[in-house]
Picture 1 (cartoon, one colour):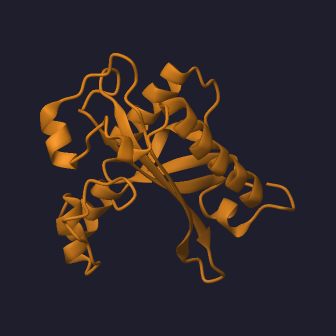
Picture 2 (picture 1 turned 45 degrees about the vertical axis):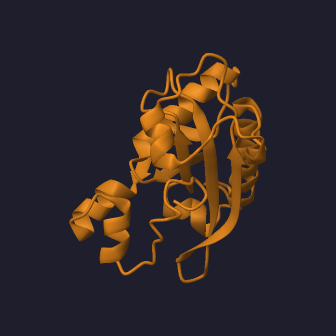
Picture 3 (picture 1 turned 90 degrees about the vertical axis):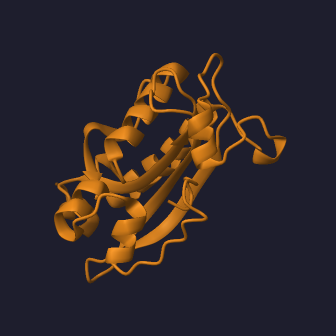
Length: 184
């Protein structure tokens, strides 16, 4: 790594952790809509602790022909067609999220972002499918490495469910706000 390598870049061998959560209209990234996406960009202090730097979040319009499973919509409480959501096309949401991540990659001298999430593989697969649909050729995320908080929670706390893991870790978690990308 060069002279401008930052402490953050050294911490994860050039990978920039970005916390991501998505809300969807089902479980299949090829057929189900991405409805919300939130990215939390982190900064690392001199002591090596991480803090929220910026949150970038969007409500997303279902893509043409997307399957909207009623059960999924009941769980996350999203009405995909509500004008109050101020939803934007998934290509715009991805472009804006990726632009914020690329800016932080440059500022931190990291070469690639790594998705941090609860059941991270699910979120990454939805992002990769939406990226493909949008015709975006380059995205900032590592395509197979993730930092999965569900696995870490199972290992350290004996819990994989986010609300239960938060309770065990003594982190406040409002179940009424759960299933919102920006809250989770």
